[in-house]
Amino acid sequence: MTARHLQPGQLVLASHNAGKLREFGALLAPHGLELVSAGALGLPEPEETGDTFIANATIKALAATRATGLPALSDDSGIEVAALGGRPGVRTADWAIQADGSRDYAAAMGRVAAEDGSADRRCAFVAVLVLAWPDGHIESFEGRVEGSWVAPPRGGNGFGYDPMFVPEGESLTFGEMLPEQKARHSHRARAFVALRSACL
Ligand SMILES: O=P(O)(O)OP(=O)(O)OP(=O)(O)OC[C@H]1O[C@@H](n2cnc3c(O)ncnc32)[C@H](O)[C@@H]1O
Ligand SMILES: [Mg+2]
Image (cartoon, rainbow, N blue to C red):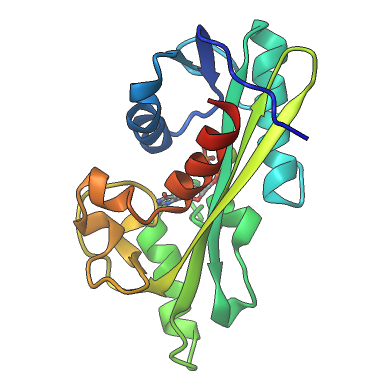
C-alpha cells in the first residue's frame, strides 16, 4: 500500500517541546510547508495515556488535526536503557520529574549511574512520528539510534537527554554536537527520512 502524501500547505507540529520544534523546522525547511506549532495555536497538551510510542504519538497527532482541521505531525520519543530492561522508554518525560515537580534530565541519568553496578551503559533513543489528517487517516514512522549514556552530562546543545547520550561509533554527546551533526545520527532524523520518502 502506498502512503498518503502530504499536500503543500499548512502543517501543525503537534509538540510542545521547543527542542523537537527546532529539529522539525530544520528537517522540514526544504519541503515548502507552512509550519505552525500546537503551542502557537493555543492547543492544549493532550494526556499521553498510551503504553507505546505509537499510541502516544497517535493521541497527539489526532488531537491536533481534529482541533485544527489541518494535517498534523507528532513525535513520541524516549530513551531505552539496557541495564533497566529498556526503561524508561515511553515514560521518559516523566522519569525526569523531580520531587519538586521540575524536570532534571541529568539527575535522572545520574540515578542510573549511582544505582547500576553493572557498568552496562548501552541505551538507545527511539522516536515514532505520526502524520494524521482530519479524516482520521494516519501514517507512522519509527527511528532508532543505539549508543551509550555518560554521566556527568557534556555539552550545552540540544535538549533533554542530549548531553548524556553518545551515539554508537562517535565520541561526542548529542549535547556537544551541532544540530546538523546530531541530525546525521538521531532517532528523529531517521524516522523523518522514512516519512519523507513515503509522504513528501
Ligand atoms: O509530547 P511533546 O509535546 O512532543 O514533548 P515531550 O517533551 O513531552 O516529548 P515526549 O512526550 O515524546 O517525551 C520524550 C522525552 O524524551 C526526551 N527526548 C526525546 N527525544 C530527545 C532527543 O532528541 N534528545 C534529548 N532528549 C530527547 C524528551 O526530553 C522527553 O523527556
Ligand atoms: Mg509529551
